[in-house]
Image (cartoon, rainbow, N blue to C red; front, side, top):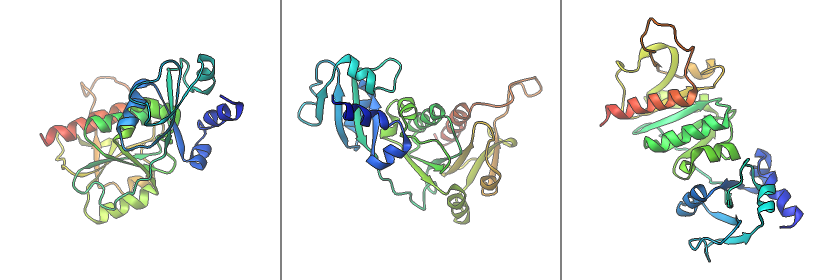
Amino acid sequence: MIKSEIAFVRSLSSKKERAASGLFVAEGEKLVGEMLASEFRVRKIFRCGEEDRSEAGSVDTERVSPKEMERISALKTPTPVLALIELPRYRLSAGTGTDDLALALDGVQDPGNLGTIVRLADWFGIRDIVCSENTADCFGPKAVQATMGAIARVRVHYTALESFLARAAERGTPVYGTFLEGEDIYRAGLSAGGIVVMGSEGNGISSGTARCVTRRLFIPPYPGAAPTSESLNVAMATAVVAAEFRRRIR
């Protein structure tokens, strides 16, 4: 690899450079395999070692040395394969959440949490996640790795979240939010469709977004009267909420 190529791949750890180039990075056999099997367009593969037969002839593949892979990888322990993939262009439908469940993320900052939430959405058959513009970038290296390939099947949108939720509520779409005070999720009536808002790690759901919420939900601790943790991690809370919504429609 020439120096400029190494520098370019490394630059894709920056959101600005990803936006400018229209590319993001995926690393690891499983993750790259998921991308190759999806509708994403894999632009180039860098491989350390023998070429995978499934890649032969289908994607531009370059053999690199272990030292070169270390230089372009964002991982502490580089894997044998790294791919450059075109950023998708999704259209956010005004009816998202009307007939099926969708998630909305309000300022989630940790890329690991974001990637885990994408993975959870994939597990529970949630195909759309609508993010506020100040939510972490799902195509950053840490977030992509945390999705474990789920990013290939879940559409992640970025928009002015308050406006989107306000319009959804006006159409009669249920907009749920998770708070420390609200209806016990295990006793509340839940719909098959709707949008569930999850707040940021430090501040929860912002006041502006909270005004768009039509149903406040609470995940109760057990036992209720005993001392317990102050709150749940946002990814853990998302897992509880998604599982309960899906349990109701079985």
